[in-house]
Image 1 (spheres, rainbow, N blue to C red):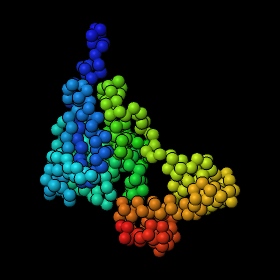
Image 2: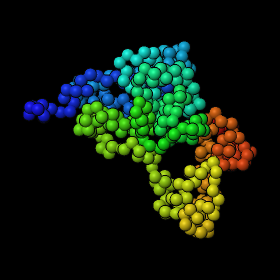
Image 3: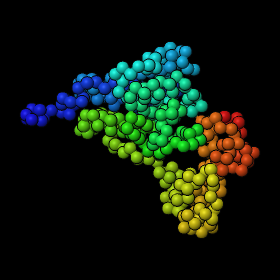
Image 4: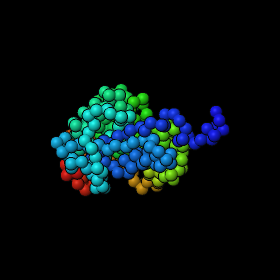
Length: 336
C-alpha cells in the first residue's frame, strides 16, 4: 500500500462505502420526532463529513387510502412537525434497511398496510428495524417471533401483554441479523454509530458522533432508564433491592415478609426505611408502582379493566378501580 493511500481517511478509502446505501423510514402518525431525528441525522452527517453520498435516505407513509391519519404525502410527528413522504414501498428497489418509527399510544398502531409493507420488505431480504414504538408494529407483523428485541421502556408492559411469548429485553438497541430494534430517544445515535462503524470504520463513526456532541457512546445492552437510585432518589441498598423487586413483581406482589427477607432486614426495619427515606409506607409505595403500571396499560393496551387489574396484582376490577380513583383522582374508565 502506498503512503498516500495509507493516509486516506476511512470515508475516502475504496470499498463498501463507494455505493450509496439506501435507508428507508416508515413513519406512523404521531411518531416520536426526537427518536426519528436521532436515527436519520447521523447518516446525513456521514454524507457531509465524507463529502459524498454514503447513505441515501427515503421517507415513507401510508397513502390516503391506506390508513387513518394519512395526509396525502405528509406524516405528522408527535410535535406536529410534518415530514413529506412517498407511498409505502412495494418493491425492494435499492433499499438496504427500512425502519418503522412510531410514538404515542399502541392503541393507534393497528396499521395493516404498514404491517404488510414490513412483511413484504422482509421477504425481499431488506433488513427491517423499528425505533421507539416501531418494534411493536414489527411484532404485530410477525417479524419478531423467537427474536430478541427491544423498544422504548414505556411500551414494555403493553408489548408483553399483547405478545406474551415476546423475547423482550431492556437494552438500548438489539441487532439480530436482519432485524434491528431500538428503544428510541437518543439511543438511535448509538445504534447509528454501530451501523456506520460496521461499514466505514470506528474512526469515521466517531467523527459522526462528535458532530452531535455525543461523546459517550452507549453499548447495545446498556439500560434504557436511570437506575432505581436515581429514579427514586434513594441510595440505601436494602431499599433499592426492594424497589427493584416491586417493579418486577407487579402481577404477583410479594408480601412484606418476603421482601424483608430479600433485603436481609427485619419487617419493622423495612417499614422504618420506607417512612424515613421515601416518606411513604411500604404498602403505599408498592401500590403506587402497581397502579403506575396499570395506568400505562390503560393508555396503551386494549385489555379490559379486569384484565389490567389482574396484570397489576389486584384481586378484582372493583378493587383496582377503587385504588386507582383514590391514587389518581379519576376512574380507570375515564383514564382510558
